[in-house]
Length: 170
Image (cartoon, rainbow, N blue to C red; front, side, top):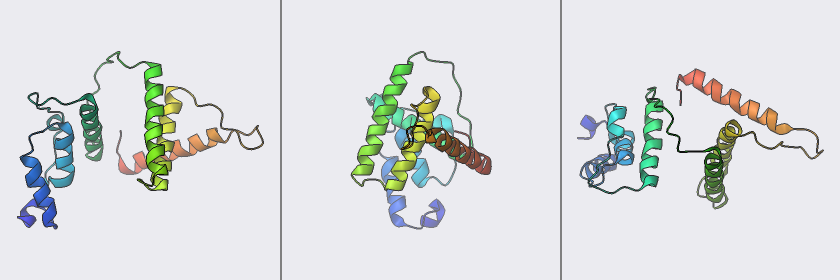
């Protein structure tokens, strides 16, 4: 069975078998099963299927969408680009950035994620925030030098280089 499934560790097949019979087959589980178990590519349309018989809260559905986007990215597939929904406003997006920043900071401070990963996640989040609305100037100790522009430029170049090296587009 291990060879057929492409797994070396028997626990992986157990997780796949358990997930297959899971009553909650929302997008998060479909993508997670693909990432952990599947030897064949998952079509993005499969990742968006949500069992309407099971109530699923918005956080879990949107988490599933995040995983769907990551799977599409990993498979170098462009997700669909629907028209604007006109639901999220500028202040909503800014508030969401701060809430996510708080989660990253709390997990980093508590040692739940390595500091290097927390710093990187925060840096990527600040790129998003800069796009949504420019960040305040990041002044050096001299009160004049704006290091933030240089830092953002360096992070953008790293993101672009990674995109060019992998061909992945988010």
